[in-house]
Image 1: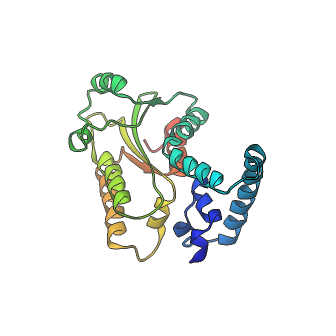
Image 2 (image 1 turned 135 degrees about the vertical axis):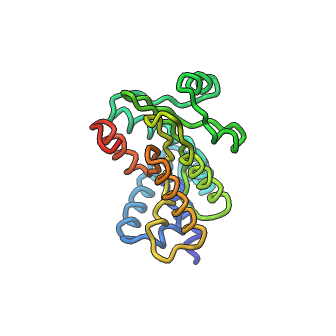
Image 3 (image 1 turned 45 degrees about the vertical axis):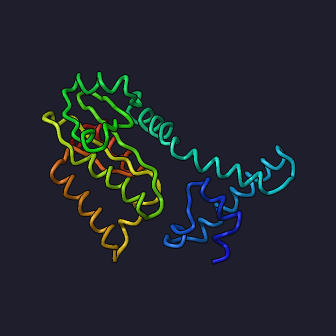
Length: 225
């Protein structure tokens, strides 16, 4: 399809949208109008800044914007937690992870099978302790399957203290695929593995942005936990 090779569609990645996913969602016309509106507004602002020069300037800008998406979960998570729980989220580094692990007496089996990988963030609220692993995934494929596998392995873990929660946060449009009929064998297996992990460890959580907000609201109101 020719449109897939246009600069307009290439720009969608900087708006957290991909052409392949766009073809599978409802209300395409409404989304297309929003994309076009953002495209025109941002293009005009940037052209006025750079001057109306070669389109390659914009291609480079969009590429950089797309690459930066992987770090954008941090302010997003920080804002959500602060707005709902009125507390701060700690983004974990090796220096503070050792202390957290020791203070909570964590077994943290995930690190043993994933090259000592540490969680992305930590939330302490009342007597609940939440370690989170975040991924930003859109398309299907081998690399994406590996990332989904990590999110599943993260919520397979359990600790003796049931107020210790492992939370897998899946940002992006990948979760949309799980809502469709006639899933591929891979997607069906991933969906079943998530269900099994949460059935075995009901204190753990697998969410998208909307689900993350709902979990924090429930935590604030002491519901379902």
